[in-house]
Length: 357
Image (cartoon, rainbow, N blue to C red; front, side, top):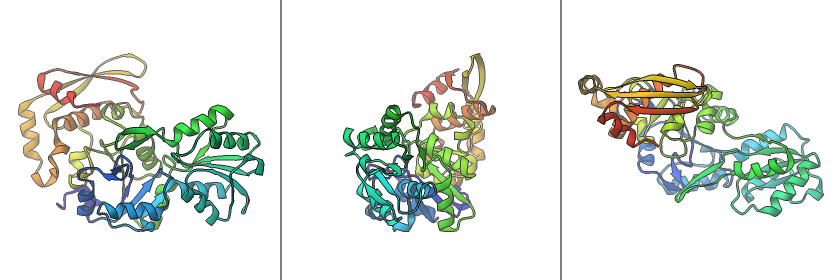
């Protein structure tokens, strides 16, 4: 990997898992090679609370990544730490989640119960595909009786091999709708997991990488850590266009191969022969952007970027160059453009936009 690569400027990678490194445990194409090739220490910071750190580490080893339980930070751990600051040690807690989540709570000294009749002091809510009406109802009863409500994360969806499945946040929404109580969330976008990861590895220049703007990137921004957004999971091209200042990454790449590209290539700005301008703002939050392409300018730009800075060609594809060009215009304002329309001014721009989602 070239010394110009983005990863060379950092001493730790704080990596999301679902939608970034894998989908349902199956490695995303090129992710393992990019992480190993970076030569940088990797910590896996995941909102998925359904597996214990040791189990996650074993799965990572299974796809070719060297990892042990200390390299994995889950939102279940963060949730238990958060609730420990809210209720007395040794209190009863009702845990909606996997057995590993319950084990973490027990290891922290809590008495884990499964019924609201036990008068738990807190409800801990994490992802578990087996959670159903009965468990959600026990949680609702406990919360209505005064239990503190803490969620491991509020991700509405979970990227899996077949697509976006129902995430923990959607299950939390059912309990909130029934009780009127919004839980405190321990996972991303809260900054705590990122701070914990930095302390654990002793990093001074970490880089966060994720696929979801409202959790991975927002959490990195909250923690003051530069971030790389990859387009392999939840948040796509138009989501980036509409991102608020609190959800804007420093770098944008196609996938984990972006670790081998230079910071200049991955930063938002005019590139690849494209130019953009806001041509209409006819309603609050609505922006119409015109995208244009100039072949001569594309040649000049390509000549100015040494091959060693490009890494994988997918990160300098027309659609990615067009995206970074458009983002540079939209992100001049700190106010989010909640409704964005990008109009091509020529055939080359139209072809670039066809790949957006």
